[in-house]
Image (cartoon, rainbow, N blue to C red; front, top):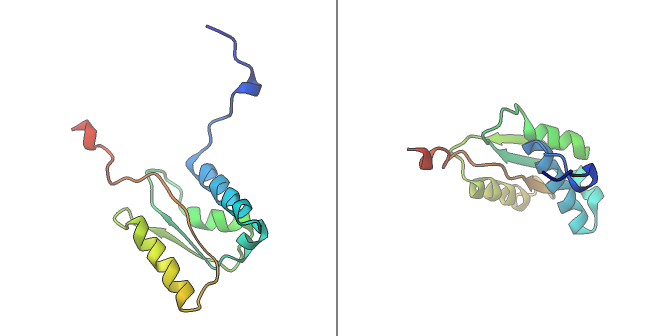
Length: 113
């Protein structure tokens, strides 16, 4: 065994923390990270975790106080959430929408049979 410095290790993050990190990085990628606070629609597909309102937590962390938040059922495809986000923008109901990913449960256990 070799000793490992804490500087060389990154602590493991919870799925929600990883998702929030990705959302914040996406904001930086736009060049206007402050625009995240203006999101009106935030959707997250249900994963194998037990968070009650991950979209609400994302909204809280990015200060999107007026966002409609959605936790989609396991059977909802990510494409369905993207389609709804686009439809809301097309209808003028939102100008900024976030669809955050999650670990999918659909294939869970397939290899364990």
